[in-house]
Image (cartoon, rainbow, N blue to C red; front, side, top):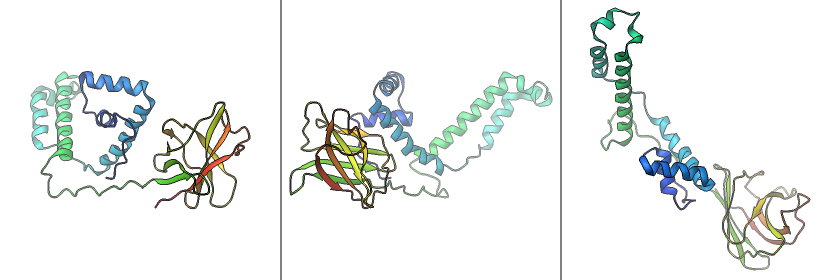
Length: 239
């Protein structure tokens, strides 16, 4: 599986939390962080989506006969002969619980066993779609202003400033310019002093499109179209 670069300083903890391997204080700390840190919560959700695909390749497992034999022994001859009281017996529920644990252990063993059953086909390799990228640069050979990645699968746009500068009472706004020549569409405001992560899908076809950054009044363009100077433009490239 192709895994994108971490987007959070505690990406490994997010993966462990999503996988369910944390316990005790470590689990409580990760849970509290997911509630207070939106970026960490996004990282956990991203890992949950990556790991969820593995469940599709786990074959159905039939419990071995010894599991059912253990259930019958727990039930005893009285419960076996008296169907009216069978489901009211606490031993029945204990037996079913033991069976569930056994089946779960078998399923986990298939995922982590170093020597899997040779008749079980290995899961196919899942390759994530490579994100689209663009480098927004000033015109006429000017400096590179920002590096941008557009992940169409995760519906996320990451803008990393390279030479952007902030001005008082002004905002930097990111635009996508469709390849068909139609009007630019706003993707949101970006920062000059750090990376900006926009949880948004690209509203147009990526192929042939370009990204641009303009300087707008505080809060963004009041018209829905660029009103301030266009600082730079960069074509989107990808697979």
